[in-house]
Image (cartoon, rainbow, N blue to C red; front, side, top):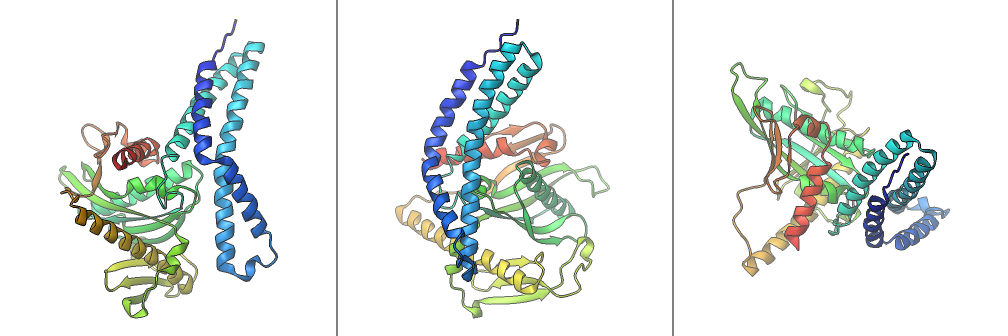
Length: 368
């Protein structure tokens, strides 16, 4: 006789989910959606394209957030029904399905629980991620491309849309840099723990001698922010360079000089965009990212000044935050949290949720 009893596990799920639901504030979320839907349905909405984009984007984000919560609630209800049917029909296949769904739900609820820790000023926003190769020659540029693929696979696993904004290919292997946008709710809060210096140690595939090579790549994560448009940048502070978009090996893929590089002269910040259809669109996208970086830089400087006045600045050995070992003992280790994964191949294939969750919990604990 089949006796499938998941009562305790489902009860624990409901308790955790109830806490999550209270933090998310589903009623307030529904009220926001109703208000934004009314604004989006106004006949005059597109008289102001900038505001229309802001309203429709906010509506899409709120609807996505609500769907994530309501889908979990429905799945917990369905799981209870499935357990009952499995016991009534003494159906082992249904029992296997129920256990599988329980494991999937526990993982989903755990991810939602981590999301409730994302209460920073910009955490609920989308993210713009930039990867830059560092020291290490061809190994570093190859590593930068490996990291880009890793994050794109992570987004694909979660069915998040990705917009690649710029890619600068290396003369040899890999990429010098790449910038892409993941504009879904909480992408910034989630991925911001990935910012810093990443280190790869492996036997180089590019050298004749079988020697261990260490290479580095930097990951920068900034939020997608509408208010960045309010940052005033004098024209004299910007140098604009126009060039042809290029593919691997430096091949030109465009027939027009549509790619744009903006250099903010006072700070030296450089932003390149080449994946839009026109020079105007590339310049607008680059300007939005530059404004965001300058806004964040200003706030970081203000925060650093406050810490300095308070006497709380401490020495730091750098931003290096994760090491990837692809020789000997295969390992990925986060140097902040101590979280380890013994199969680097799965990490490079986008299985980042454990590392990211550990980083978010570490950051929250550190800030409290």
